[in-house]
Image: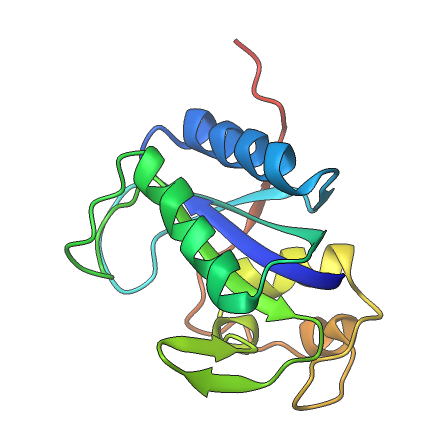
Amino acid sequence: MAHAWVSIGSNIARSRNIALALELLEARYGALEQSSIYESDAVGFDSTPFYNLVVGFHTDETPAALQAQLHAIEDSSGRARTSKLTARTLDLDLLLYDELVVDEDGLVLPRDDITRYAFVLCPLAEIAPDERHPVSGRRYADHWADFDMDGQPPLQRVDWPPRP
C-alpha cells in the first residue's frame, strides 16, 4: 500500500467543509494521520481566511485514481472550478504518494506547494517531520526550520473540533 499525503483547505463554511472532507476521507481510506488545523489569510487574492491542514493515509489506488477521488470529494462540497484565485468550499491536493516523482497528465508529485507555502509545509512538517522530500532528500522538519516566512501570511492554530 502506498502512503499518500493530502492538503485540505477551505474558506467557505470552513468548519463544515473540513469536517466533511475528514469524514469522507476516513470512510474511504481508514484512519487518518492528521495535523493541527491552521488559519491563514488567502494567498494571491483577497478573500476570507482559510483553514488548512494535512492528512496522511494508506491506499491501493493509483495516484491518478486518488486525485480523481479527491476531486469528487471537492465536488460533493459544491466546489466551483472557475479560477484558482478564488474562495473555495474545499481544496484537496495530493502532495505526496510514497516517494513518487512525476509530472504528467496534470499530476505533479511531489506538489510544489510543499516548499512554496507555509500553510502546506507547516502541517506536513508537524505530522511527518522525519519523512524526506523525494527530490531534495531533506526532512520536512528541516525544510520548515529553514522556511522563509517573508511574503507568507502568518499561521494560527485552530481549536478543533469547533465549539458550538
